Length: 335
Image (cartoon, rainbow, N blue to C red; front, top):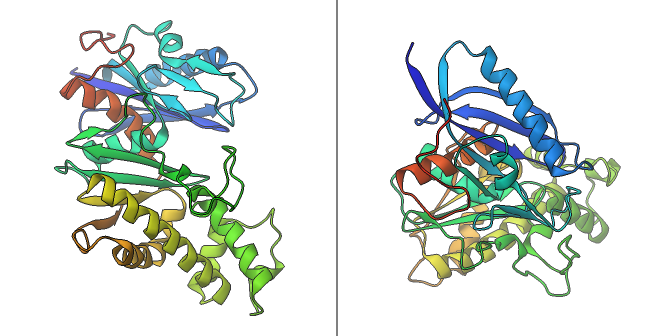
């Protein structure tokens, strides 16, 4: 039986941690998930992931060889291999995930945040194949971004480049979990559009089924479903979200001049309801030399597996074009 090389792609979230075995072509051989148990220390999570990986591997009919582990995690620093001050994980100030995983595996390990992982995944397995300059925006609980320049992810001098979600829309605006006010993600995210809906409900008088929905029950899908029926409040919320996103994407274009910008994540599943007005607003805010030259596209990776594929792509990309990173030794493999 032929042995297949695979990377373990791991997506660590505040509630759930998912992983899968991903081959060089982006094929997902197997996947599973466990509860993150965010109140517990990181080393316990890593030990439980290791045990579950062993169970999944043992159940496979095909013979595989692990060639690396790629991890997407909140507040992850690629250069240091650490997760630093994660909001939804009780891990303290700094946790070195590379070292924790290498206690169990003699393999290359790389870690970055979920948006950076999504960008590398888009490059290898998604719609950015062949592109060298593009941006990926993840629209979920917050707004993440990964910037690719000359075919490489842009980390900056300290590993934290590309935090477009924490650029400021209004310095006296909404309070953000990061401690600042007016961050883009407080307006353009799943939670942000819900906050916009409640602002509009307070300011406007139109009848809307959204008036019967409590703040705790409101979701971006609730707003999307209402917008599809022509609800004026929901449509206004999408328009305001698109305006602010288009404005800040125009700023990002001025910095990196990308060929395309990809939107992914739960809010991006609104499709043309978000894409078309955002593109129109972006072009309206762009300097004339960029106008009409930057594509705004949906992600080419399936939403259910994109996080795992993106995490695995970190290692496949390094194996193709070795970068400097903690724990990365291209010759280390596991039988």
